[in-house]
Picture 1 (cartoon, rainbow over the protein chains, first blue to last red):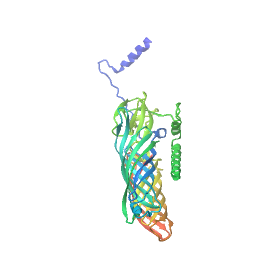
Picture 2 (cartoon, rainbow over the protein chains, first blue to last red; picture 1 turned 90 degrees about the vertical axis):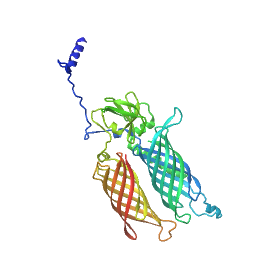
Picture 3 (tube, helix red, strand yellow; picture 1 turned 60 degrees about the horizontal axis):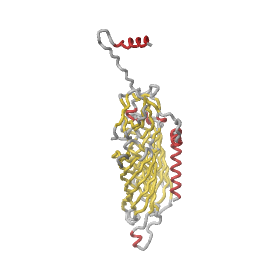
Picture 4 (cartoon, helix red, strand yellow; picture 1 turned 180 degrees about the horizontal axis):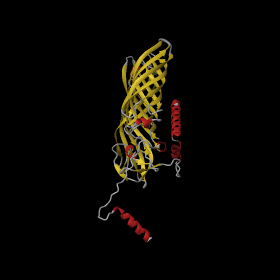
Length: 208
Length: 263
C-alpha cells in the first residue's frame, strides 16, 4: 500500500522541473466535427402538437350573437411562432330585418361554420403569479390568417386576426382565452359589404 | 351535433394514429404510466462546453436557475420546439436552448446530432405541414399543404384548398415538386411545378349554367423561402397557372404567401 502511494507521488511530480518551473500541458478541446454525427432525434420525445377545443360567444354581424364551439390544433414551430388551425360551429339568429319584417327568413340555412389557418406569434411570454405559491408559465400572443366561412351554403373568404392569452397549467395542459375578428364580404343583407364578426372564447388544449 | 361527434372522433383517431406511427414506444409507454423502465432509454450526453445553463421555462426571458459543469452527464427528457428539457445526475431539471445543447458529446465520444444552422442538410427526410393564402386572378385561395423533403434540395407537396370566386366556389387538390438548390442561406429561392384538380359549385346568387363542374390545372412557379429558426418557413411564391375546363384553357397568375414548419 505504502509503496504504491509513494510511486504515485513520484510520478505526479513529473511536471515540476529542477529549476522550479512548472511545465503546463495544454488541455485538448475536442470540437464537434460537422460531418460525423450520431442521430438521436428519434429517441427524444418531441412535443410539437397541441390539440383542444374551445367555446364562446360569436357576434355575427346583422344576425345577433350566438354560442360558438370548435376545435383547434396548433403546431409550435419555434418558441416564438406557431401555426394554428381552427374549426368552429355556430348558428345565425334572427336579424333585425327579419324580426321587424314580420318573422320572414332572409337566409335559408342558418348554420355558420368556419375554419381558419393562422400564424401566431408569442409576443409576451412570462409567468403568472396567481397566489403567493402558485405560479404558471403564460404567454400573450397575436394571431392572423385566413380561412373560409360557410353561411347560407355559400363560402366566403375570411380574414381572421386577434389576440389571446394562454396559461400553461401542467406540462401537457393549457387554458386559452382568445379574442378574434372574422372578417368577410357578404351579400346576404342585400348590399355587398365587409362584415366583422367578433368572437370571444375560452378553451383547453393538450400538448403531445 | 352528431356531426360534431363524428369530427371529434376522426380528429382524435387521426392524431392518435400519426403520433403512434411517429414515436411508437415513447408515446405509448408514457400513456401506460409504468413505473418500471421505459420502452425507450432516455438520451444521455456529456457536456463539453464550459457550462450548460438551465432555464426555468422553454422561452425567452425565463431566468437561469442552475448550471451544469463541463464533463457532467445530462439526460435529455423532452423537446418542445427549439428547447430541450434535461436533467443532471442529481435530477435537477430545466430547459436548455438547442444551440447550447449542440455542444455536447454522446457516450461514444461522437458529437450529438442535434440541429444546427444549416437547414438544407438537416431538413432532408423531414416532413412539413403548413398553409398558404393567395390571389389567383380576381379570386382568393386558401390551402393546407403537407410535404416531404426527399433530398436536401428537393421535395414534394400535396395540398388541398379552396378558391373563392365571385359566382362559384371551388375545391382544389394538387401535388407539387419543389427544387431549392441553395441550402444554407436564410432567404433561399426555389422553383416549383405541379398539377391540380378542381371541383366547382355555383353560388346561390348565380342561376346561369350547370350547378357543378370540374377542371384541372398545371402551373410553373418560383419564389423565395425565408427560414426563421431552423424549421419555420415563410414562403412567397408566384405561379403561372393554366386551368382547363369544358370551355377551354385560361391562363392566370397567382401570388401566394405561405407559412409552414418542418418536424
